[in-house]
Image (cartoon, rainbow over all chains, first blue to last red; front, side, top):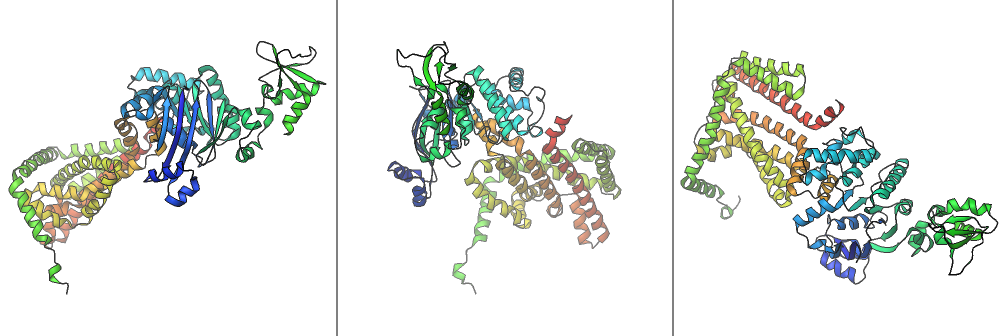
Length: 339
Length: 288
């Protein structure tokens, strides 16, 4: 069983969701149900599993249900029907006290518009999660100061949120979520409100932190580039339905339908595709020529390109132990770029 | 003519209900009235017993604490001295005591009711018309049953004042809590805060500027009730206005009216200054 499992979640917004649920189960889509009953379908039969330690990105446009989906993981929203299992425990069966204990100990969340407490200083905002757990003041201030420093805000401990820029406020939000040392970090469009340069910085910062912390991250975004950059796996939602789920290369190379294809058209493929995906694997006994240049399986197309242009023929793809695992030709590189 | 058969004898019913209350619960009302009276008399004695200049200095200090501005503090002290120089110091202290007790009672009742209204849409739907009625019903109408239950004097005056003055603090507490940014509440819930923690750590602090504005309005409305309160036996500045009307003594009425206005100005300035501070206190501290 996976770490987090979501099974057959339906979420219908409105005063009487049961009737619409039946329609949805019979296959009516979002627009039909809205026209017939006035109810909005948030999620339509979504099932997915998330593994421990991975960065799982949920991508979709506004109204696709992605923010609704992430709120099912900590029960800020309860489903109309379906199951949410966390490490084998059914979180929908929890009492309110059990749920609060679960949220306190195991989850941290970062919000699009930060959700900081405007009447509290940075250090008191960051220590808020521990304060809820009745941790004493000096312990939580130490923890808060440690995380404020790690997200690069040392010196701003006593400032108030409205004295900080958007990027700095979201660093506070990130530090606040990390201070309780949660297993899972839920990030709801965490960087969407930031301007592009700051957003890029924050993405790099998050990847750096994740390299040290190995949390399980569920990241919501409407930006495919962000999804491809951060995600170990990506789920694409449209009108509350799960359209495709897979590794970034799979999304680019084999889009599930025209909707996903339209999205991927503008993506800079050379930044996403890696040697591993494009190469011809060495079936046991395959030979590589010793004179071919070597590239690692994790190298991105944009880094392979100069090597490919310098060589006359093929390249040997090697793994971490310097063993050859595949062959990549110049023609394959060019074909992948042109596709 | 409206057909007589359709007349509803509402008046008779109300009379019967009030009679029933007096007969069955008279003792309870009396006990309540006594405890309220004890507090009021005690406060009145303190205010009237304290030398006038200590009261003036106390008002100035409170004014400075609220506004951090010497000019406002000095202005408030001058207003108080002006009341004294009109020869109305003692009566102003009586009015002040009545007002403080009525405002305190309004806040003690109003803030929890406002919180409950913010939590429950159903309660809010019930309370809004009641609040409208409390504010628009001519106060004489509820003075009569208050008189029957509590007799002539200060207690019915306080209750009439509370009925008239409590709605603003109730409404603004409700509004203030409802205006709290939903994402901040969601963030608080996502960290496992329970309802009590959300109320005390998030909702009330963020609603405070609105609650302070409500308390300020409640205070102003309590002052505006002093003349009516004096009609049922409350002493103070209102009594003086009433006397001016009865004796056609325009001068005496005017003096008492000016004293009421000055008292209102003093409390409005103090209330507003505290309201502003609750609004921006974090910014001021952050810059220091």
